[in-house]
Amino acid sequence: MASCGILAGKVAFVTGAGSGIGRATCRLLARDGAKVIAADRNLQAAQETANQLNGERATAAAVEVDVASLTSVQQAVAAALSIYKQAPSIVVNSAGITRDNYLLKMPERDYDDVYSVNLKGTFLVTQQLAKAMIEQQLQGGSIINLSSIVAKMNNVGQANYAATKAGVISLTEVASKELGKFGIRVNCILPGYIDTPMVAVVPDKIKEQVVQKCPLARLGKPEEIAEVIAFLASEKASYVTGAAIEVTGGLK
Ligand code: NAD
Image 1 (cartoon, rainbow, N blue to C red):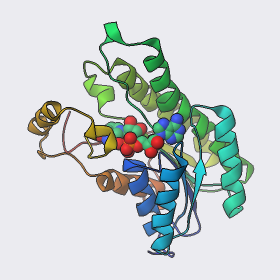
Image 2 (image 1 turned 90 degrees about the vertical axis):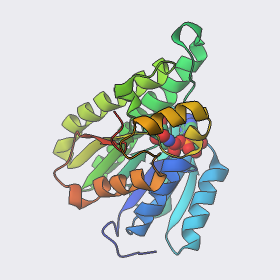
Image 3 (image 1 turned 180 degrees about the vertical axis):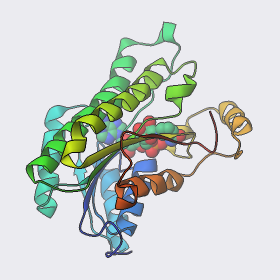
Image 4 (image 1 turned 120 degrees about the horizontal axis):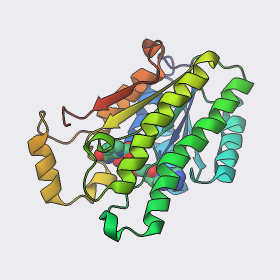
């Protein structure tokens, strides 16, 4: 793997790094030269991601984080700062969960859990790492949040998930306005249906309907999201902030 790519000298902090889009993102950011902090509630899975990258001569470390907890996020940020003696200037908020159910049947707990991870978690990680970047006067910060096309499709059975992913778009835009003066760009991606463990549990019938409606007639691969994240992380996207980019194979 390249240690002299366009992200050389930068540290990237990726949540949800133990699986799916988060893991693929760690690989592509490392390919482009970033040193990676793979953060996940599942430390073993994050460690596997880091081990794979270190085995490919990249530089990666794993930290445990529950993005829904301020204390846990602060501990993970402190750990990240001590590992590379440098604040991350690339942050990817990929940790996310679903708890699908019809509105009339949805337990309060399933609403709260999805809110806490997807929206509050994105807020906490953004807040704590933006503070660290500003304190270290880092230039060229880039924060990339994972929303979802579900924020626009508003699928039946996903009131909690759709609302949090719509919230991520608003959070991204506000953060871009507040953090622009510190040279920090904030963008989000709206993936379509991507072939990860999250989508593996979606019934085949629904996946077939999605593929039929999708102009490119297939599910996406995690690397196809990670490539757009790597672009947004880099100076190639130096004038892109506050954007919500659909990466869906044309699915709307
Ligand atoms: P995934 O289930 O494969 O991975 C999610 C990761 O997040 C897991 O490793 C899990 O341990 C971690 N995680 C869950 N709760 C956490 C917490 N509280 N703190 C820290 N880590 C936690 O999911 P994925 O498909 O890779 O999705 C990544 C992101 O992309 C999510 O935000 C998801 O909502 C979004 N997204 C995915 C798709 C898709 O089709 N896969 C589509 C649109 C948006």
